Image (cartoon, rainbow, N blue to C red):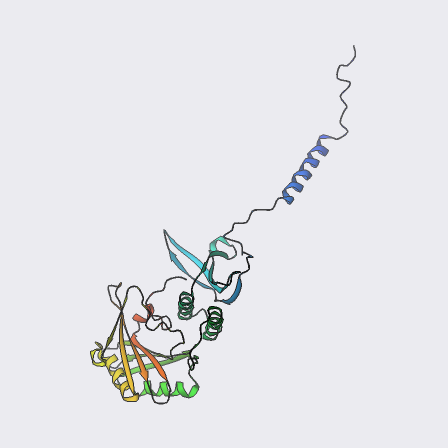
Length: 301
């Protein structure tokens, strides 16, 4: 009897060869497939022009749980020439690169406010701030007023401020620090050992001095209405050294402790020309106070 299956040809490949060929085919197909990348984790190439990048910072973001994160911000213009702020962040425990969190277009005032907050955080330098805000001025057609270019304190001016602080005999244990246009004096009262901070700086061309901040009340008061006797002592010595001094009481109303900072605007201070700003408070209140943004909030950009 003839074999009815004789028309089927025997394969010349062994079972092992067939399995190897299948594996090779599978590998080739996998290599051709590009793994999808999340829009949130890749850097978009959309015509954005970077002007300023902050230093990386870390912290705890309080949401449903405490997340340890790292972040940095980028400022510039989008492809349509609009002022743009971007935030990149990553969670170190995930061992991933920084990803774009958000990108927002904004107006000049909000752009400036964000940069001032970055100055308070210490993640940008004052020179970088001024270079970036100058580009924003040109873009928005804002003409800078004459004589408002910000400069820090020279060595001679810093010596004048130090001499003033040294002359305050109601304060002791004085420590000094300068940087990014601010002269800082940390000290203590001779009685009661109360910690105080005195911060000096010049006004900015686009200062947040009188900007409204949610939760912060501002009241212009007389120097003798200052509640702290030690801060009033500073006012007394300041008023002797300058032609005019205005005092603003700034209180953080959303805190049970109602932290207060006294902001003094000095005119004609001996040895330093122009307007000078002095913020005085106990050391604890300054943890909520930004001397550039002049508010009590540490909100993220």
